[in-house]
Length: 580
Image (cartoon, rainbow, N blue to C red):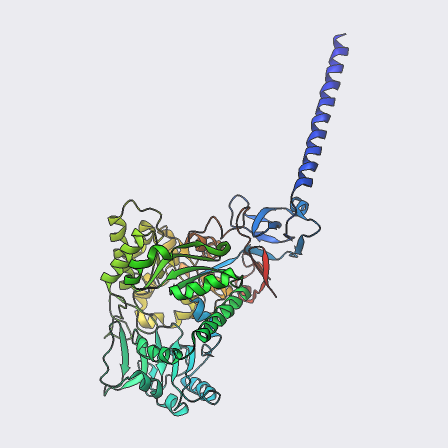
């Protein structure tokens, strides 16, 4: 009897278990049927998420502009409906959309509308390009170019001052058209006689504060202008452009924005930190965003005077405008010049120009006032500082502001470039939680002449010291400073993980990043540096579907193969905006 009862009990348990399994299966099937179909599904990929809980997956489902699910192919298939766009990645690498954390958006667009001097190997080549341009413009029209770098020329022009050519050949080929040729860094320019005539430049013209008119031994301007002295020429060009109608000026600006957007998307850049923009330009950004004509997300740093900021700073704040396409919550200041132009502000003189320690381009007291305005109004402060003196002074001003307002937390203030640091200042980045907004490509682009500028000891101790900064606990976000460098993140990623110069030598390779650190600096760290880490920078359910697909897996291929990698697809907010 007991035996029979036991058998019945076992049978009942088995039946009960079958019921549970059946109910679970039916519930699972019901849940799968109830899942709302995705608008876009990416399948069969090597998808690096930068989400520690789910570091790599095969597939992603997107609804609207958000990621709704990630996982293996089999778990994402249930999101495929009749109208779902399905992309087979074929094993290609997909990553969070690249975030360029420092560039100049309008200048990037304008660089596509003027002479490209980036590949010029000599002064003679540049003169020839201007001569050709002069044949196709009206008398009086400005000829503009950008991208030259005297350190990249195969020979030094004669005559010269500190490697910079005299204007005479430029003036000969363009006697009736003013010429303005901007250095790759943007921190100096070359002009001809007509441009200097329009600007009223004479031997008696004084150097402006924070700038230098380069002169010959007799005191005559040679046509080269460094840092703030460029403003003398640019104001003359602005006066000519002022003759255009408001509609013509706006059309020109919109054309630059469109061209910059196209260039970013083609290079896999989905977000761009615009390092120094006027409120008038921001209004155009808003207009285009409202019209759905601003495809790249912009994090904008205001560049307005302290006087204007006092009046209007609170009104300038803009968070996630137009479906997170425009955010304004930062202020930009330029505290010194560029190392290549001997404009970076140093603690000790240049090794190759012992008479100079560079230039302080913005008064420290004015920067202190900017810092006060920023912290009182909950704005991030982003300061361009390249030389060790500029970085030290900036850190001092930041520290003063933090101590004066101890109740203010999570400020995420940034130093833009942080290229050359005194060894004692490196730990301060981590201690003060100051973000180092650096450009990996600057290291390898500048490497051939950095030692000439700083000497071996200073270069090794403090030039582009990514490893030391990371050890201090600092966050590094990456970018290109476009159009100073090509906006291409692949070249920058390669520079960050190899520090390999064009001749194959390595620039202090002990300071290079790992591949994961480099990718993080170009994605999640960029999102953090713009207070957007909950929206961008990694691939997670609920975040914006900004995704870049690459032709090769840059995380695993041999180093020498990285530069051959191409962007296959750029997705912003779930929409495919570029496809090779």
